[in-house]
Length: 123
Image (cartoon, rainbow, N blue to C red):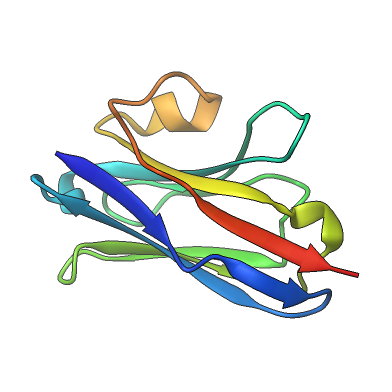
């Protein structure tokens, strides 16, 4: 059972990146998915999460209006479209999965925690 985030990279401020979260060993369609990030020297913070149906979404104030979370249960992937990136968005981004959306929404320990992908935004 594994959860993997991908799509990170180096981008200039104002640019865009799309992160993807995929699972092996289980199907994502029954789980709420959350994106978290951790910058060097800082605590991990919740960025966005989406319910299993896709009808409920949450965005941290710091990314609201710039990031969009979506899911394709047919393809069993969840994406985080990041636009208008800022240097302060630089961090390792992780995706997480839990059958309970509230676990991700409040930042509690999820059932599955994936490996991260590094996003670096240059000024």
